[in-house]
Image 1: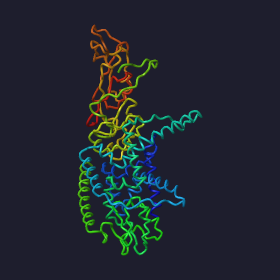
Image 2: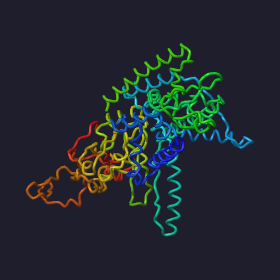
Image 3: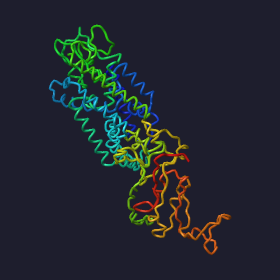
Image 4: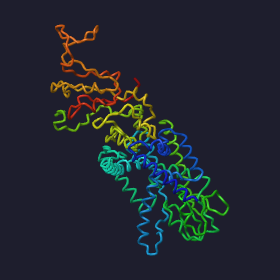
Amino acid sequence: MLKPIRRILAVVFWLGITLLFLDFSGTMQPFLGWMAKMQFLPSVMAGNFITISIVLIVTLLMGRFYCSAVCPLGVLQDFFAWIGRWRVFRKNKKGKWANRYSYSEPKTWLRLGVLALFIIMLLSGFSAGVMLLAPYSSYGRIVASLLQVIYIDINNLLAQWSEANDNFLFYQVEPHNNPLLLMLVAAATALILFVLAFLHGRTYCNTICPVGTTLGYLAKFSFLKMRVDENKCIKCGLCEKNCKAACIKVEKGQPVLFDYTRCVACGDCQSVCAKGAISLTKKAGSTNDSFQTNPSTPSGEAASSDLSRRSFLAVTGTAVVAATLKAQEKTTDGGLAAIEEKKVPERKTPLTPPGSLSATNLQEHCTACQLCIANCPNGVLRPSTGMEHFLQPEMQYDQGYCRPECTRCADVCPTGAIRPITKEEKTAVQIGHAVWMKENCLPVAEEQRCGSCARHCPAQAIQMVPIDKSIRQNPDDQQWYDAEGNRVDLRDLLMIPVVNDEKCIGCGECEYLCPARPFSAIYVEGHEQHREI
């Protein structure tokens, strides 16, 4: 029953996590959000010890079942490998699946080297390298930047049909602004995975993936393992030829050997064994044990294995310690003139979402999986193209603003980079402050009355004052008077905005709704450290 159970769980997790990245309405998050929080590396980044404990217990109980059934990138590799087998199957005149795999020697130096490099990048804060190797994040980028665009196009076609038939079941959605760099990274990752899995099965999973390496060496000590009853085995080699992990070695006159650091407990070997010689069991008298401790293993290989074990323990020990420690040229003309697209201002400090606490916290915990960006309903979050925050979310207000009542990004983040936050807490968190640009403002540049920023500020942090400094307000009657003492009507005057930095929360509504083009006359400068007001 191992293989059917594994397949069912794999399909459930793969579909659930894929829907989390595709869903732009937020309806799936309450039901499927826990699946993202079950991923191992995001749980380590978030300090989610419950999930970490569950994954480690399952690994010590029955091996790398997590990699086989829970990790979406692992399931994607299985799908690519199935395409490779289907291609050969179609050419097989007997109508049988091709036996296309074979045992390969473990690349221990490469696996531990990549894991050590990953930990070094994690400790040094080199997020660009971390996110390229993180398996869950790699899958998220593939779905968010390549598949969601197609998903939204299909939705918009259905929305057009619905509107034509007086049905409003679907509605038009603007695609998220995915930069070309993100799409290139996602496409390159998908291509590499496809080629490796198409030709050799789970090569990436068992050679490059840092999570696979970590769980793989723990799986050597698992209670239940795929073992062979030598009394039943006839050395036909079907298990080796059907092992997508390339971890089974069959030789005439020698016991069948398993490399448990690469075995993902998929059950394929068990299902093809005609003699029923393979089973997931604890150590028994007539069954073989670990690949590295088999009596037939040469002494040099055993010594190398022992060295690999010590190296792995040293590297993963460092990982545990690290995880613990880190736990304006044209304006509008009433809709009659051509409207230029807004340009994004250069901010000295990037804007990070409420709940991220600070730019540093976001950088240290975010793996650039794109889940928050894919779920942002306002088009505010964008992947950064700077190397310091490579593909991590940053906020831009040229296509929308951060609505005070929206907490979607905090709800979906599985790594703790954006902490859960309530709507009430969000309205009291200052992520930045508005800055007025005099040379872009319509009352100054073109002597037109405006006041859009003050009218729409949800925090009431912007006040309009006369551009003529000789006009002052009398504190006794709160009325405005000119230099001669005559009372004036503000509706007849040109007014400019004044920002109260203590009240501004940095939501960006003023920047987004400012009619000045191509640059807004008011923009939000980010704060390195968020604070409550």
